Image 1 (cartoon, rainbow, N blue to C red):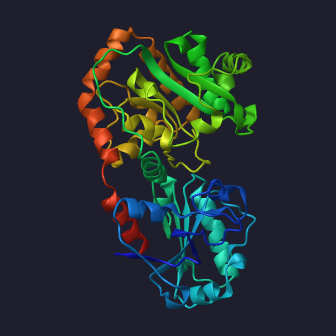
Image 2: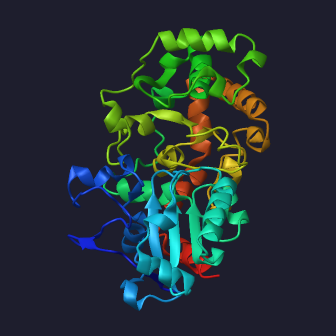
Length: 396
């Protein structure tokens, strides 16, 4: 099935985001600023992915649209205060009601899709829009359980696309000087809990260990999904750790750390294990999985990892065909639903690993050669079939 998209306008061969209010031009810094302006509609990366992976698509004028045509609205933030149908052109509304057009929300974040579905359904009913005319693509794995929703691991595609000019670090058996890489750009308390435990043991000097103090998620200690007071002295330890910031593992700026086109090869080529501190341990209380570029960086660069993230993060990777090193790394934490217990299980596995003699870590790493090369090749492979599957699902 070839997807048909209705775009309001193109500028310099790029699709200007439908509904966007920012006056920006492609190939300029302002093109990356849509996420700062309501209604937070941004460039449709799905188009970039289809171009990059040679997936055909059609662009259709509004007057020529039919029920197989999608009007895409890509979002950086889903604002529940917005009446989406109030923003749409009257002709778009008319064609929606006549089933001559569909809306396609494309959202690469992990917000609870059940709550989003309730909101959209309410707005559809209030505006007499047939619910089936509004589709929603979400990066939260629970989306696949909801009618008219579709799940996509967007950051796999996004990282692969934006990091495409950076050559991958190849598997090699040359001994390394660092045991692990653990990098935190944005402060969150559960991330600080994790890094504090490494620091408490004095193991931070054995790895590329970084925790910035320039960017915060604006969370309080009470926002922490980890029940710290059930974990010994963790609260006081974390407070002490935060007073010692920053820790740095390179000379890059905080902005550089968030840029997919920049990488520090030594973080992968000169350490044995990647400590993935994902965006969420509890994905908006949805029971879903959100996988971001933090997971796909070590995969691209032939490095094993432990994920501090949602329950079933490893299970989701295995569904996608990746291998998760169960032959040498205990996977028991991944299935634990309770966030605190999952974190405790994972931190104990991590501390045991990075407390090993570095020569044992070298042997462990070498034993994973086949899995690491498999993962790297899978990530770097063409995603045409994956994208076509998502497109076909949208037409069901």
